[in-house]
Amino acid sequence: MSVKNTINQLQDISSQVRRDIVRMVHAVQSGHPGGSLGCTDLLVALYHEVMDYQAKPFSMEGNGEDIFILSNGHISPVLYSTMARAGIFNVAELSTFRKLNTRLQGHPATHEHLEGVRIASGSLGQGLSVATGIALSKRMNNDPKTVYCLMGDGELQEGQNWEAIMFAAHNKVDNLIAFVDFNGQQIDGSTEKIMGFTEMKNKFEAFGWQTLDMDGNNMENVLSTLAQAKSMLGNGKPIVVKMKTEMGYGVDFMMGSHEWHGIAPNDEQLARALAQLPETLGDY
Image (tube, rainbow, N blue to C red; front, top):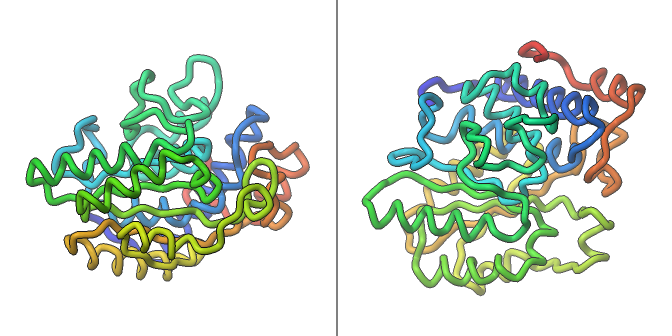
């Protein structure tokens, strides 16, 4: 992207994206608001400030472009809103989320040919493998651009991730930056209760990765950490960022609870949520 934004402008975009998220899931009483709200600042920073890509026309191949892969595809509302607000497709299409014949499926899919979506994701554990393959392909084709991938902390319970983690390090895939949304929550409760592991960074480092910490709900820290991660590219090791977020961030009654992983607000709850999220770009 050629136009750069101030932190205040990015925070304004994040507020509007969060409004979009709660309105989208409310309209169809279906979807995943909690993780979407928590990961908003990262996706806004990537699509509106950091990544170098061509919004239109969209290219599936993405040659000469930075590429983002959403592995935890159930948080599709934040991906759709962020991409639409970046001009990849029309913002008005957000009103079709999860409706019959929509291109905005509950999990991102390629069959509907939605611009910005390069893989079907949401079958958890697969995204890092895809991102690693794309990054390796770019390196083999002398494409200097970066591949970004977002996973959930609960998603790391899937074994395929660790095959990809080992493969990426062994093959020195050093044009890859992965993020783990470390919100401590998954559909059935806290990750610590379900299958906890507290030493995430140690595990990645033991597998041969470079690691960073980030406050995923602080735009200034998101930007500085992304800059640091980019400075570490090309050193023979992939990079992972442990991104601490609060599920449901921005809406007080949703924050910190696994209960908002996959339920929609009712009318009264929607009104309460929107009252906390300033309308900055205009609702769709």
